[in-house]
Amino acid sequence: MEIRENLQRIEEQIGEACTRAGRDRREVTLVAVSKTKPVDMLRSAYEAGARQFGENKVQELTSKIPQLPSDISWHMIGHLQTNKVRQILGKTCLIHSADSIRLVREIEKESARQEQTTDILLEVNVAREESKFGFFLEEVEEALYIMKDFPHVKVRGLMTIAPFVSNAQQNRPVFRKLYQFYVDVKSKNIDNVTMDILSMGMTGDFQVAIEEGATMVRVGTGIFGAR
Ligand SMILES: *Cc1c(COP(=O)(O)O)cnc(C)c1O
Image (cartoon, rainbow, N blue to C red):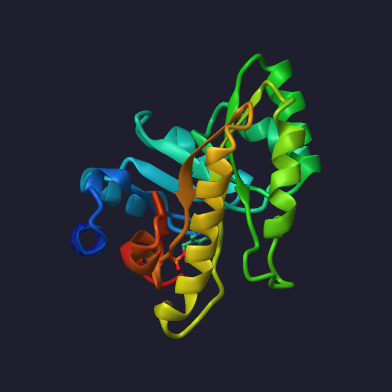
C-alpha cells in the first residue's frame, strides 16, 4: 500500500539527514501525525511498523485509541484546553503542546489527583508568529523555574512549529536557535526538567530540523497524504 511506501521513503530521508549531520539514526523518533485520517489508514501505518502516532484533538484521540492496538504510543500535539486535560491524562506518552503556565498548572493538578506523572514538552513560538500558540523563547526559562515545583509534571524538552515556508532552508535559523537554547537550558540542570526531547520538523522541513538537532519529527502529509 501507499502508506507503507510513504513510510519507507520518510525513513530513508530521516536516515540521509542523520548521515549528513553525523548523527545516529536512533537519536530521532518519527511520530506519524494521523489527525483527520480514518482508523483504517492508521492501521496500515501500524502494519508497516509505525508505533508512535500524533493527534491534535482530544475528542479524535480518545475515540481512536480503543480502536487500535494497545502497543501504540500516542502523542498529543495540538493546543489543549485546560478543561480537557482530565480526558487525556494517562492516555498519551507525551504532550508536545504545553503552551502556557496555566495549562501546565492544570496538568500538575490533575496528574496529582490521578496519582501519576505526566511528560510534557513546552511549545515555543520561536518566530513569534501571531497566529501561533506557545511561549516566546525569552519566557521559557522563567516558566521552567516555576514548573520545577510541579512534582507530577516532568518537562522532557521543547517543541516548535516552524513557519510555513516554500523552502525548508528558510526554517534552518529557527531550528538552530531552538537547539542552542535547548542545549543551554539542559546544562542548567533545573530540577524536574530533563531536556532530552526536541520536537521539531514536519513534512516540509523535517530533514533540516534533523540536521539542526531535532530528536523527534512529526510527519503527517508525507505519510498519510494531504488533508
Ligand atoms: C498537523 C501537524 C503536523 C504534521 O504536519 P504535516 O505538514 O502534515 O507533516 C506536525 N505538528 C503539528 C503540531 C501539527 O498540528
